[in-house]
Structures are given as structure tokens and as C-alpha cells.
Image 1 (cartoon, rainbow, N blue to C red):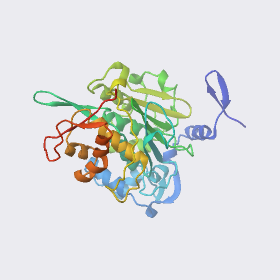
Image 2 (spheres, helix red, strand yellow):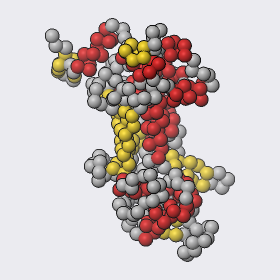
Image 3 (cartoon, rainbow, N blue to C red):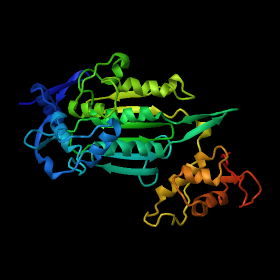
Image 4 (spheres, rainbow, N blue to C red):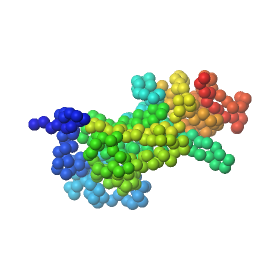
Length: 368
């Protein structure tokens, strides 16, 4: 016996994960609601309980595990419960993040400015994914007479909605697959396993009237309770509306959505990107000792250098640059990062060299 699915104008043999999903649909079950043999008493849920208290103001009571669908009355976890333990119990519950140099993928060793792999429960993955995008993007600003206008590359709320959408709607039946966050100069792409749960590909749908069908209703309900998502079915519209609020937004920068039988892709455009203001990427070798526990590697060096060059499109002080890059020791940071850029001619001082001057600022030298 073989099952077939329709793709385009032809019928092809359905992969195992699609057959399994069809079986669950036919029995009115979802993957996240299935009971496992794992006992709740063998695991901890510290991050879940602390986050729930922080975001709702309520305690996560023992009875909530049953009422929220994370465990049954016998103390056995559901798949949703396993995905929310402090321990990493679901192997493919991972997020791979890469900041690429340029507009396309390349070698992870030569063309990646930053590269992280996160594994753990869903809340940790959400927080880590958002932090990775935040650390590899910029918030420029424009000064007015009495105020300033912040100009972030991406809307924080849109990023959160896109990652929440990836985590709660991904197909966890597909083994050996994970969520990928790929950042480029002009965009960030978030790809999650599993296409549309029902209906045609997302690019053929009207986002304003799309119907909410949840692949993992237990997880979706919990994220809704913790206020990570608003009304069910409003996530994609929220991504668009939040991006539209950004200074410099145009219709060409509208978020895009794509899906096929295997995955779902969200593309957020960098509203500050233009080919003219792109800062050239550099590769400098220096001896990094700011954090002795870190293992100095080229991708970390390149990331910090480019953070400085991008941030210093407008004149910045040492203190501003150090804080922006997440360091505390200004003197050490200056010797390890700012000075090499000055010596290479990619950064310059705005005043004659006076190390003790409090008004000294640094600005990026644009490539000719």
C-alpha cells in the first residue's frame, strides 16, 4: 500500500512524515498532544514556570500541566510537555542561526560573520533566536531639534511573531530537521520544517483573510496564554503591520511568505539596506583577550569589527561603541578592536588625536 500526494500537476509517493501527519489528522489528533512514556517527575520546568509568572503574573500550578495539555493524570508527558522541559529531550528541537557576509550563502567557515546553534526547550529557542537577530542587526537614529528617530533594521515584534510562528507551526514529525535563521545584508530568512498544514501554498493565499489552522494546538494555546502571540491567525498580518511602522518602509520592503510541502519561509527585509551604504566586510587578525573564557575565532573578530563599522556610520564615542558591542572594559576594547580599525584606515577620529579628549568620536571611512 502506498499513499500519493498531489504536487503541481503530478501525483508523487508521499514521504513518511506526510503519511504520519495524515494519520494524525484522520484520528483527530495532533503530534503535540500525544502521550509519551516520559514521566514529568523526571524533568524540570524552571524556565517555563518562571517565564509564565513573568508574562502573566500567575503561578504555574501543578494542575496546569494537565489542564494545559502538557501531561496526563498519570504523570506522563505529552510531546508538548517534552518540548518545554529544561532538558533537551527532543533532538530536532533546535535552531541554527547564521549571519552571512553579503546577499547569498557561502562557506560557513569563510563567509559567515556569526554562527550559532541552539538546542533546548521552546522558550529558550525563542529567546535565543530573537537575541541572535538583535545582536546582528542595527538601530540607526536620526537627530531632530528636540528628539531623535530610531531606525531599526527590523521590527522587534515582527521578528518575535515570525519565530513564534516557526516554533508553534513547525512539523516536529520530520526527523533530522530544524529551524534555520539566515541573516544577510538586506534580509533575514526564517525557515521551519513543514509546509501549510491545510490549504494551498501561502504565496497563493490572501494573508488578510487566511484561516488559522494549528498544527500544534497545545503549544499554540500555551504561547497564547503567555502573550507571545495575539489572536489566533493574526501572526502573519502582525508581521506585516509592524514592519510597515518602521521609518523608511516602502511597499518593496513588505515581508514575504513562501511554503511548499517540506517547509515554510518568512522573509523580513532590512529597511535600512541600500547597496550604497553597505560597509565593506573586513578580516583582521588580532589577539583577543577581553574574555579569557572565549576561544578567539575569525568569525567573532569579523563580527565585532563590522559591528563597529556599521554603528560608526555616524560619529560615536568610545563609550557608545563599547556599550553597543556589549563590552564593559573600554580600555581593553579600544586596544583590541578600535585601534586595529584606526590603523587599517577603516575608522578615523573626528578630532586631532587627543586620547584624553572627552569629545573625541570615531566615524567609518566609506570605501571609494
